[in-house]
Image (cartoon, rainbow, N blue to C red; front, side, top):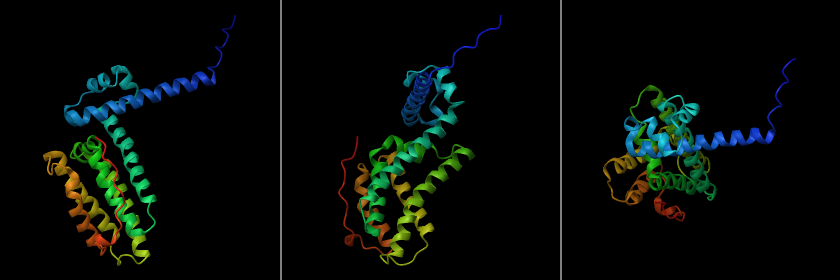
Length: 224
């Protein structure tokens, strides 16, 4: 007698299984964010991530083949979160230079208020090898492109004189990167926000925008 085929899995059951897998993967990413920030890439172990996520080591390897894969996936998950914060701040402004100022301020404030994320993106990902360097360059390029788009709009509106916006956008992000990295590694300045006014004035003047002529957006309370 031929074996009868098992009934297909119900749609609700399939959805539940997918949801459980996604929840486990997110727990692993959240745990990886904590472990990599606390121990660094080389000091972190798969066992640490599994333990912090309250998952098994087998569960880790079901979702990620190795430590490198989850680190790269973590960068992929962090970048859109930072981009979304910047876009929200920009959307509240209509003037191109005010948008530029909002983009600069929000990049700086986001790194300042999310120290753990900043350390992963700006410190831990540096010098880990070719694959990591390519990923890091793509991430930096996305942030530089956000700045470049606002520079282009400011030029088109006549608010700032023509300038090589690609070079300037990378220089702006590089300046932010150096100030934030110094704070992350050395703790100087004690409050990262203390460095912002000088940096803001320097960068805006570099494209012919007078800092005092830009209406400063309201600052949000930094998150711990």
